Length: 161
Image 1 (cartoon, rainbow, N blue to C red):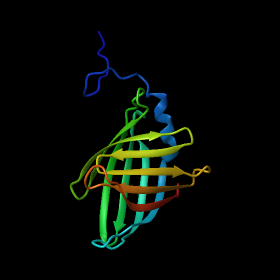
Image 2: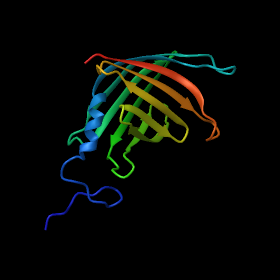
Image 3: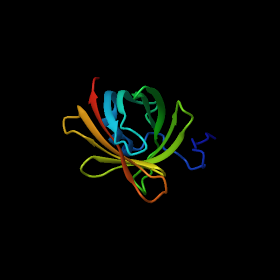
Image 4: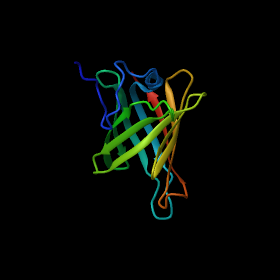
């Protein structure tokens, strides 16, 4: 008897990726990223510049997102896995790990107009992909208390491949 594939919570997975994952295709490619944090009385605004790469992991069940940016003089690298599509909530689980030892779990969703929302416990963003698929913009927010959200940074991405 052949065993079925299972996830960590023992729910069977399909033999083929859920078609809902195809909505992530809009992100695939290499992007030049640039932006700036908003700054505050305690922290100056910081310029951000680097690259973001989105690619499908073998099997097309998960997307890998690589980030390599300079935030001011500080280099930050992130690897993130996006995928598994939850049909009932229409969300994509996301898990990221960065070069400073941080771990983040988020949920992604996309509305009928193609606007993406990435939501975590302490950070969230709204990502808009241009109709031609060559640029994206993102507005990031963060919270320290879990309820009051503050504008954190703005980013622009230009597709290079």
